Length: 427
Ligand code: MN
Image (cartoon, rainbow, N blue to C red):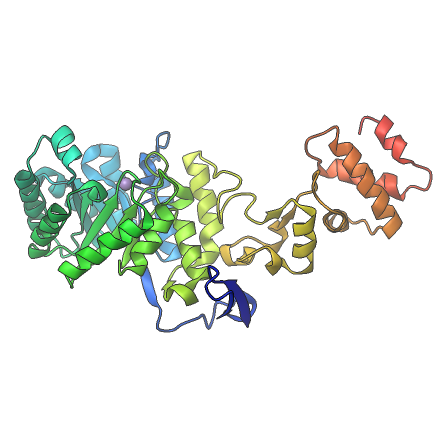
């Protein structure tokens, strides 16, 4: 199937080859597309969201859901931060198959040893030391010189490598670090046999093209480097930065479900997954993740974290497949593709969850569809009357419930009732 897409005015409308009915998953897209890896950090950076505190069994339940979706590495916590956290990571390590189980660690011998102890029973254990590299963090937070920070990074990776080959390393606050020092640290950890290097926009400061440039610079200097992109959303750019990093050759992204994470959160897992899946033909990337489990997993995390995604949150928000304007509703009722670029069923929402909101700005087509769902089959005249009644009711009440819609329909059908009847009757 062909679909037109605007190309920034350069060539006017160009035509893209998109899959039949854009969403058939079985013989999906470009067989040569590079598969993106995920460092899913809902259980670590996500748990650093102020206000969240999972119990060990809850962390395991979330880890099981994430592993079942097919994420590569589950960042499960910070083992040395306390006994409950250590035990939660160990519980996950002992019960998860098919995904790597990771603990982060500062660059101290006891941190790395503790992280390893927590994950060592996993089928695929991983440890992830980190150190702040930016001048501000070095001076204010660590009180260390460049040379000292460099040595911390080197010895941390060397110690981790005594335990496992799966040692990844994060340069915290990479995007505010001197260019030459970034390269020095990467050189040192690569010499010690690091696996992934996480380039971190810890404070969500980078612009997408800057982050792309950073990935280019690092890859030019170290052709064998494997990069993971850790992006925060302080300026609302986390997903854009993560996608840019991938386009520039990063292999992996760090993400959190529902956009949880420190402060404004990390790049949202569901956004990165669906951006890649929806635009895979243009990105030449794809994901090996079961997208139909996005909604159940998002809801599990919302329930256990006590934090509901905002209504207009991309992909998982309650309104992501809801339509309010009459023109939009009419379009969607004729063909959902007029205003939807994903299918609800692709993320695990039943098609019936596509909502037509009957509000002040909605149209007759949506009202008719809603009333049909409630079992009413109105003639055009009756529908016109019901529509008028709904608008009157919405002058008195902010939102209408099923009971209100039924009342409007019954009144419209009734041969004796007039618009005034409902109006007088406190609607
Ligand atoms: Mn972070």
